Length: 315
Image (cartoon, rainbow, N blue to C red; front, side, top):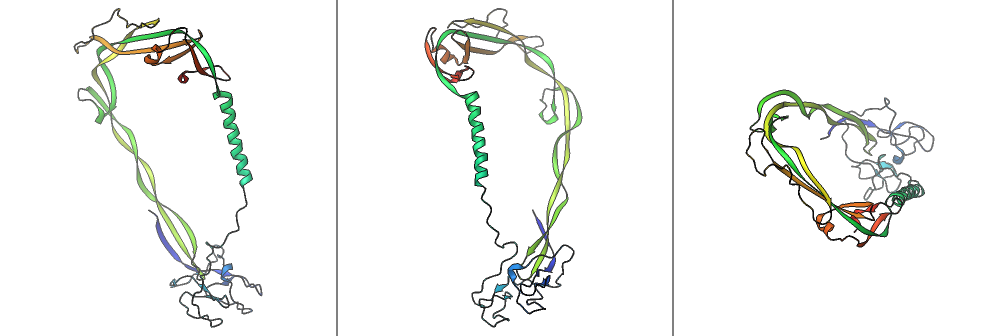
């Protein structure tokens, strides 16, 4: 949350358009002390840093208004113009420095269009060189497959982790304090001073402060321990060609085994299926798609136009 603190009210300045007197006080001097010309509130400006004149006990009542008849700036509560006597019904507020009309920005469309065009051209060239495809007809020349079965062993294994994630059957834990994360803690404020034109001949100095934070380490127990677990120590793999894949059967332990040290069992099973096109290009595909093609079948596929690489998800 931002904290705002007022540092007081100060006089805005203005320059006389008629005699050239400069640095006149916008709140105290509504007319030029040299020639008597009325103040132009649209040309008020901030004094230089260190040259501000404070207004003690200033009570802000609202923005000044232009007299509809003579354009002299009048206070927010005035009912008639003190310069010409005209009533101020319907008088318009003067413009503050912050809300003064700015010159229209220069048109930058040509530059933006050039940048957008260059980016689009770059993307097109990347696509044209590396990703553009064309349709080709290839012949299925083979079905390859690989199947493997993992071999798991029950053993006493080292492991580690934070204390709150340590399994209930962990043994011989050895823990040390380590930084696990950080948290933000308050560390004072970052403040900046702004000048706010109140449009009544004064400006207010405002100190805007936001809290700042620093990262503080959060420590926890990091433990090394031992657990008894099944883990993969080997695998049996079988590969071949044709539409009759098989699982390896040689030197396999049983599927189930009791949990005792040194016991082994069959573990995770994996299988891959590959279609061969024109004797040299290969695509790994799901089994159903692999079985959906026959050797010698002509298939329309997409290939990279530049490299000839087969796009495997195109058929």
